[in-house]
Image 1: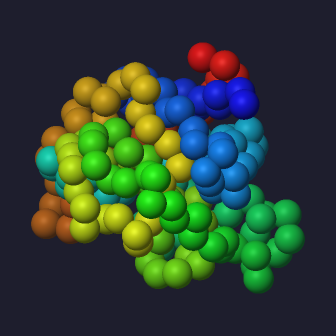
Image 2: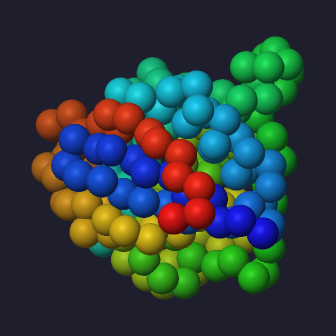
Length: 168
């Protein structure tokens, strides 16, 4: 199988994510297609938790928005897709990339990156679809920006651009 990776160019530096295309084909397809149509360009990191995670992928910047590529293609009834949770993939180290969800079958476009590990409390709740290959220090820098009590940064940190890399 070929390894698929995505480069996130953020306002604080670059992050390269290797995707788990075998274990989570729907989540990876969703992420790759959203990157391809530039859906994530200018998305804010709207939730930063120092020592835990950074979250982005909502075009509204509120943490309430976003939809999957399936919703874009097939309409509002397909806005979300089901979890692909596997025992082989755990939040057991820094740099784990997971779909952000508010419950079962609520995967859309938002995702988070862990900046420290392990974080077992996230296991079996979120679909892990990637691992940071390069730029973990950038994710950690994003997690450390000054934020309010809800984790909303006072300074805008954004994904500027996404680039799909094949066979890194």
